[in-house]
Length: 575
Image 1 (cartoon, rainbow, N blue to C red):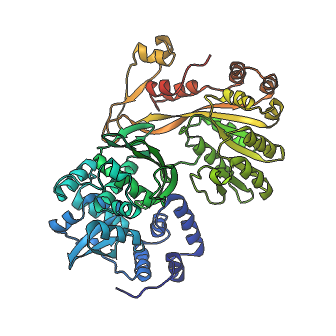
Image 2 (cartoon, rainbow, N blue to C red):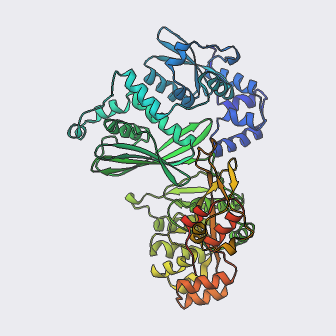
Image 3 (tube, rainbow, N blue to C red):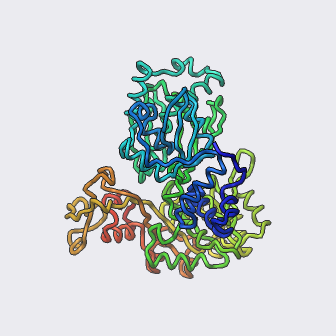
């Protein structure tokens, strides 16, 4: 051990003359948006060398730096720490003596990792410092590049425990477990290990949600990738209480309360990238159902050029959001990307001379320079009340997470009429239906025409994996599903994914948006005042240049971005 210097890493580097204050400020901004370790951010941006970072970390933590080039582990050491654990925590076992495991780690101040490992491995754990890249390369070298699966881990747990491991007893007993017992269940090493592997596997596969679902004789774990649910190997039913309790401990929830729904949040760092998990529990007849929403900042592109807008629609949106006042609504079902689109608008507007305030339920992505407020309805902090007070904060631009009722709609309109640009969301099937929905909420048509600038309807569709993309001739049935004839398809190119290792033999990799951009012009305003039908509003908007969701989807099919199947699934023909 070396003598510690009790100063932040950035301060140490500045004092040593290795970076400037400006460099530190830039790296901190990157760290905030990507979740990387500060040292890794500085190295990735070319502002500091790896050697300088390791030297400063050594001074800061008192741990020694180790060169992994000479690392040669024995089989027993590798068996003590599985590849899954090494990857989850980004650590490497170096030696084991006197019931003490020495590991290499990239973040010497990560006390939680040391505590978790002590718990899981039932021994003392001490750290040394190595670069993150070296650790990952060495893990791949000695453990292989394949990730241990949940199924492998369940078999390993049963082998280690001499048979199926149980926590608690039957249904009646589990309903009466006291808080001490619950904490013991949540802290069992196999449970910690299993849950960590589930999280890392789902996040590695770009999962957007992870579902833990109790049934009478099963406990299912599923995760959603690109809008489609996939099932993991289900753990035994008797693990459900222990896993649920572990999640609640991590999310700072009330572990003893199993009769009421709860919400919480878990913050993780995976390979130097920040990941937020929004946790929701819901009591069911067979136990608590838990859903984690994965907010991986590293895969969210908050850029209007990246969400899927056509070049013309992107230019139009840029023009509209530059207006000093008015209302812009994003509409569509839950999980269609509305929030990402609006955040992309805010990011484009986020300048030093503009004050932006958002009110959301929940706050999904942290953006420097924007004041963000979390709605808390149980204590009376609703969108409408929050919006009323936001207006006293002298904002230029306001984002309201969702217009749920007439009161919130009226407040948004009031904000627009007093010189603010307001962005919000609404749940409707298409852009034209948004105006009808507002009228149904008893919003006066003249107020809609005075404030509404545009409506952006959208859906998310899966994109073809570029690694295994191939051209093919669609069948008559496929063409009919999107309203095309063989004549319409003449000269058009259709593509699909064959399936490969990159896309896990699915044929799709990632998602993009299809959009319907309705700009409220004079002719449309006249129809709104007359309370015209949705069909009439849509027809006028199309004459003015609006593409429907299906038409935008067809363009993406012909461009080789997606498939007929995806567009047919997410859109319907509109006359």
